[in-house]
Amino acid sequence: MSAPAPATHDGGAPLPGPATAEWWQSAVIYQVYPRSFADGNGDGVGDLPGLIARLPYIASLGVDGIWMTPFQPSPQVDQGYDVSDYCGVDPLFGTMEDFDRLLELAHSLGLRILLDVVPNHCSSEHPLFQQALAAGPGSRERELFHFVEGRSSGPESPSDLPPNNWQSVFGGQAWSRATPDSDTDTEWYLHLFSAGQPDWNWRNPEVGDYFEDVLRFWFDKGVDGLRIDVAHALFKAEGLPDAPSASPVVDGLRSNPLVSDQEEVHEVYRRWRRLAEQYQPQRLLVGEVNLEPSRAARYTRGDEMHQAFAFAFVRLGWDAVAWAAVGTELEAARTLHGAAPTWALENHDIVRSATRFGGGRLGARRARAALVALLGLPGSAYIYQGQELGLPEVDVPVDSRVDPMWARGGVTRDGARVPLPWAENPSLTHGFSEREAAGPWLPVPEGWGDYAVERQQQDPHSVLHLATQAIALRRRLWDEGVFTADDGGTWRVEEGTLLLCERSPGFLVALAMGAERVKLPAGVVLFSAFPLAEDGWLQPDNAVWIRRD
Ligand code: TEU
Image 1: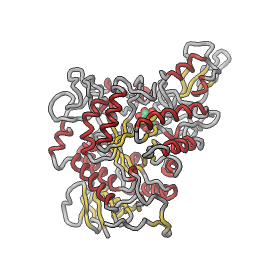
Image 2: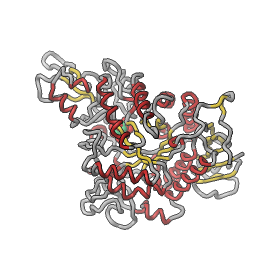
Image 3: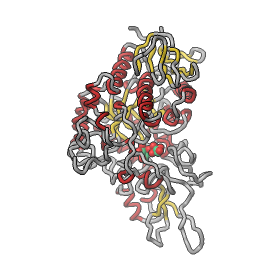
């Protein structure tokens, strides 16, 4: 099949974009949360040897690569997002030799490896933070972080109040005393997350240089790219002024404009892009930029990151009109900045889609349909481990919750992080770990084996089969030139509840989001989440890919 003519939009001007797609433009990436993926040494925590043993499973999904959340040395206050050594491997997960083995085997299986880099903050155990604490107020060492004199409630109580009213994403104030028991050290340090995660001061050029070395270290090893944690937050408003409101910084920092999306941050990604381009093949940068579409797209301008997650649907209910509106916004941002959306419905921070979309059988149907829709959209797609099994959110018993957000803010993300069920057999962990008696780091609920990989591999109607088939067909459509990097998406709603995204040219993704059946759009159905029950109709919570030439 010959490649279709370039897509045209708004008056016919061709969109900017490469004639030949880069690998990441068509990619499906599988997110691995190593703690919960597979436990190789029987200590109840997933690790690199466990992941190595299961790499063939990931390859069998047909995905292009893996994004791994942090496995670097860390006190694990925030399950690894509190890094104390950016260039190591925490013994909890294995050794650097294990990582090298992982990288080599992944590459031999055709899988790229993306790592998580956490540049907004480190661990309070990081040697540079420890040195800053020891060096005391006013020292050069403290300029790597945000150490600031506290405010005073009265002459008797010097510096007893934090420097400003900023709130932590995890709940409570975003400041802690440098040395709580000291009369002489009256400084506080900033932490947008937990007190164990001090924010770096990116206005100090030494921080930029430090991270350049970190990037080089992993790129030199052959790592294919990086997912950048809270990428929009590195710079804070100059002078750290009070926020207009001291309400908790929920929803990924969006309620305090002073802690994120400062213009200076773009220079960081320009520098990182230049570095990424020095490697062959070029290394990929994908950002966690939890901002509205028009702001997030600015991080994917031609000389910045390659991708930024489109989190927009994550905040929406099962509502075709709302999805179409957000899809249209994302398309407008794409047209403006030339980078296609990077889709994700789930990750380790978000309530599982099967639960978010209604729970039980209804939620399971919707999650399955949404996954099919997602894989047909123009742009790269990220799938979170277990999404291909249709895992629901788990109500982790209160005593077992370990997410620091639970202690600080009363919200837990543990329910999306429960160990993966590999085997249906009745062992306590369903094949995740050999640690039977004490169990894994988060308990698995009753009935977890029903979702097990082994079981779904035997069932041709399973979510696992469906996801694998959708990924294979998607790949074929790219190879045949039906899908191209220049494709846009025109979003609309028909019959009140039928969500449509028309991918240029002549390819339609349809998702029935209402309670009633709807007319099936004209064209040849290439794929569906559920079999089509009646001629010419689409049942509620089904999704189809349609070709109309
Ligand atoms: O998350 C950044 C973030 O602000 C949100 O995802 C937040 O955790 C969520 O909106 C709360 O509802 C990243 C990581 O993905 C997350 O696991 C870390 O806890 C966080 O950074 C700190 O490193």
